[in-house]
Length: 95
Image 1: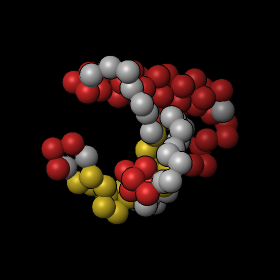
Image 2: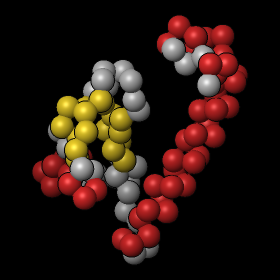
Image 3: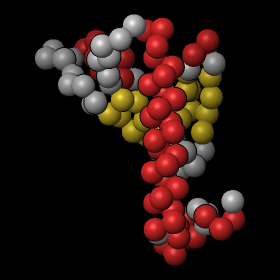
Image 4: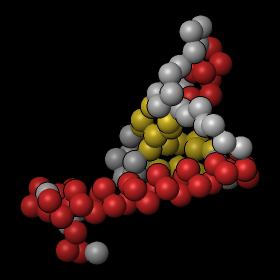
């Protein structure tokens, strides 16, 4: 189910940062009518509900900062757990 549908059908509304995750995406839709698919277990797939207090024209900045923070977090995580990630193909030494 899409987050947009959940917001529209929720009787009480959804709280900020309500998150939906998925293991696989078969009919992804993005900006400018772009579509995509992802293999099962190969990507981080999620939708997060936000109620921003800034104009929609600045939404790109939220995506950029969240993406950069996630990269930093994952790089640190991979360094700390490199022995445990090799079985998943996440060996930080192979980058």
